[in-house]
Length: 383
Image (tube, rainbow, N blue to C red):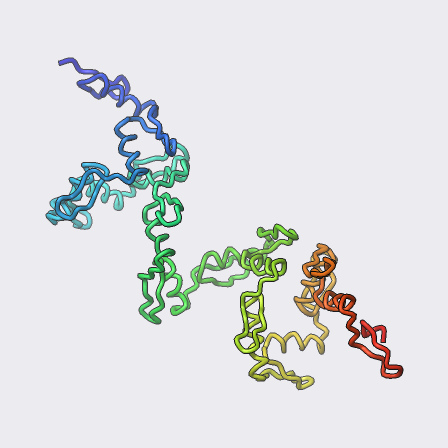
């Protein structure tokens, strides 16, 4: 029988077509392309198996449990889970395996061997399956699709987690306070509330954080980076949450409502402070003038009247302010931002109080009167 030999590695084949397919492992030629996601393959059989990820077709079914598989070899390996036979043992840690290939892969944990290399970015992997999933970063292949909202995912586990948005399933429970979570990662972060663990530390000021994203946001205090921009007035923000709240100036959205007087607020913290006006509790007292305040922050701001402290500085003209709200309004001089608009004549104002005064020109309201002649005026300074 005639044998066909590879002139690169000298491997022999009984068929010329087999040699041709093998040669592609050396040339990296991939003549077979998926017409759905355009991923390329060296063998047509590999393309045929890949196409099943798009159709979700699983032609090989386990006759014991009914589980479906795209490849027969996967089904054959699966059968071992029913027999519970694990004849292959790791001589390092004594762990048992159903298949020799699984034992071989396991050895790489001990040897740190990474024989699979990405031919695009050259990152190394211990397992072929890891490389296969990694390729999707480069191809942007997302073979797993949500049948509710059609969102696509590169990993099956991400799709499974995503489904919980639709089902509101929360299978992970905190064993301390019993709060439920959709994702294991959320539970892991939540535990840090109880343990006070803060594993992420700022290398500039040593402040610690329980969540990495909070550390990343914190760095912007030092760098003054403001990556979030309002697409209406182009004001910049360090945090996405600040931009979200800022948008409410333009939309006049006030989603937080007081259930006692129905007054609406754009920020929840403002609503919480407002509740104190109903209880009339003012537990914070100024030790200079004895004025009482509902909130500690208001007392702290009030102290600046006595100390003349102005800790807030405009980074454009360097003017100083006692209160952050004053600085916020002042910035509008530089940005020409005028978020308050008259719905009668469309004139815009940078400060809400100016809008309120302007509205009197339409209503002819004159709330200020001269105590000598009784004449009424729009503005107090005219009196």
